[in-house]
Length: 492
Image (cartoon, rainbow, N blue to C red):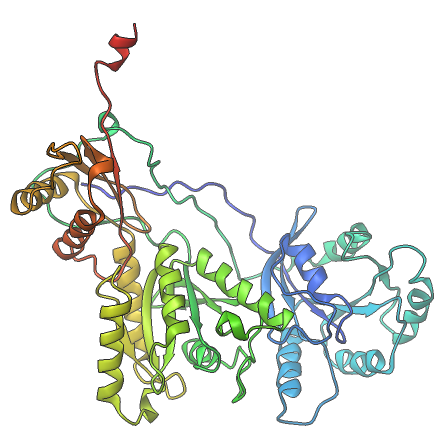
């Protein structure tokens, strides 16, 4: 049987050039970033210094397509501090961009920090556009005229929050359209089949094959989210995979706030890595910014295809991490567990036994979750981790032949027949087919679907998992009653 092709929903225009948004804290950089990418992607709050890592997205303005990067606000800091590392990320964004949008707060006017940062930006060869933000109404007029003394030419008056003045920004960016960007984004439809099907709608498949047939998996980047508690080494792992200090890391917990996505290629496979903020127990979360960060993490899980749950080898799978793992499974995502800091673990045998015991007793709804011991700091077994990610993604995309499924169903019901219904009648399981992938989802047509006990449904799910080697991925099973062919005649 041939693989089922994925039909593209639409082809997005590739970005033509790159933009970086820079400025001191709280001038509206993240607000402008969200405006340009067309969604609430970066965290926005009136507290200064929310953004730490640089965040990249696909921006569009009246048909003009570009890659846009949000950066941390510039602050004076000593070498080696977190603020200094944040500015290093901003400096790299400036160097790698075709144009820099230097934002000021027109209502606050030009501050000494604006002038100091402007002098640093001027040392680079990248073209700078001066943007006077918060110019809605008349409150920003004084700061708008004062901006001329920065030496970047005439400022563009905008309001990122209200979307005002973006036409002038559009015209200022048109000359940069000739600069081609290397990044390209293509969005494809998932190609899933509607669950609302009947036995008459099923297309017969080639018989005599028990082979797992995979969907076309390479049409779009693999969405890979990395989650865990604070300070388990998520950002360090991402940096190791990328081979670059792309994300901020530090000994203190909670360095990462935004869910930062980075496009990457591993063994020819396009992957979109998403580093997320650490998630603590809900009772301990009181800060509003941390609540926003956790919301970003759960959104990243929802959009992911495979999720890596990073654990500390010295504190294996506590209650909060079990909650995260269950949420990943409930969302239908493939899960891989990375036991990090393995190179410094004191009792490795105990850690593995503890992990195995907790998976068997507290995560019974999914069996065979792949576990890899790694060290994000030294790079130990990170290739083995990525190979496991590609393998489990393949399984998550699998499609099984209908003939093989029905042979299995006949054997399973013969070995353990369904129990009697509440009316003392035998429940008959007539037919099974796979309705969709991502995750594998099956439909069984039964005479009395509502009378089948949950325990027997779990028996069927475990049978599918063991027979067709679907360990480690969620499996969904729906029971439906077949259509009555005489129902329409009876109504007439």
